[in-house]
Length: 366
Length: 133
Picture 1 (cartoon, rainbow over the protein chains, first blue to last red):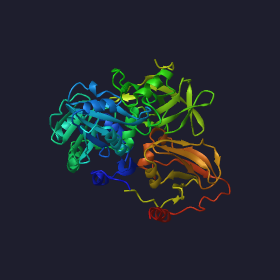
Picture 2 (picture 1 turned 90 degrees about the horizontal axis):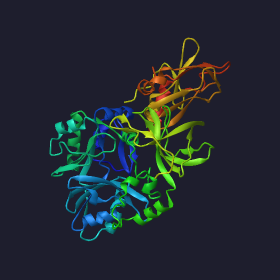
Picture 3 (picture 1 turned 90 degrees about the vertical axis):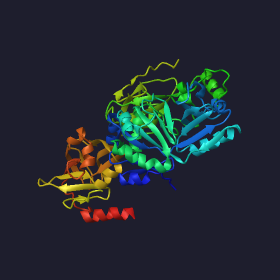
Picture 4 (picture 1 turned 135 degrees about the vertical axis):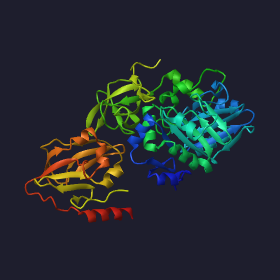
């Protein structure tokens, strides 16, 4: 049985076509996902992300606990009101989920995790937390994302508050209202938590101010172009962050920090990565698909696409491929029986509305 | 929301429409139901003009954000021309599937029966309603 967010009726009213995602009935688009994509790059789009999970952790020892729980180091967060992206790893280094950790005070944090994994994440975290760390699942809150270059202006108009002028990855709070300058599109924007009962009213205010309702279809092409992984698709418990283009999010700096998965990742670094996740781009307007096989010049299997699609901002087919090391390009995929060359690129494809990709050097990573 | 199938043409159970033109050729497209199910069309690839296709054969592929979908001719025919507009503006297929979003022009092969097995607009409309039950 699919769950619904507090905005389900609003989506219906706006003419959404629905899709199941992470056990939720979510808007896929409201007419045209390509137009919604362009609107986010050009002005601003509003996304319902109330299916995601919010966990508040506080109490003595919370910082120490998160430094053990997460692959990135919350000690790197400079001050209260700043956030950090991290993977949640299993002991063997496999990626259970990715999340954002927000530091709200001394030993006070908020974690925002993915919809499909939130129950498992919560159980995993509770099973490992010391008794002094209080964990509260905040299903009483809902989440919205306002994304696109016009977002700051729209937010100022619809919801004035202490979040005006926030830096990227900073956030501010006022009562239940929680506004962070984070997102999943490669554009400027905000993620906003508010009491679930007030979510619809806030969504209507942001729409009235000019944000366009945007569904999961555009959310997927925007995050693909932005080079951002989707948990459960581009990485999962079967792969580690080094094989998922997420090595930069794992902090090995403090040799004393024994985070979960560290030993396995250090072993993987010693033996050298077996696979690498890269951006792939077609030379023309077309659509790459999740799980397509990538072939080398001799036609031998060399990996698979973890995500694929059509990138409206580049007007070309694009995606992510997990390829066997060492890389041995040139590579191609078969589309309707025809070989189509793949250009390997450094991500992101697009940042702040502009093409941002560079050719990938095929020599082994240093 | 979706527009009813026009009564000036006939339909297949695989959601193509065919409209007889004055010169003996047929325009072929996909229905509003089909474009809506596919989502935004990214490109349309039509077999080259002059290609002869058997009844039930594929004449084009419509590639959308969601899926690649073959388009079939219900009768043996030769492809006369593709809608060149769709190469530049594939979104027209979503916006106007029964008009400017036509996909290609077919000439029925000698001895083929272009009407055989096709549905009229009301039968096609009913078949969609039945599918919803």
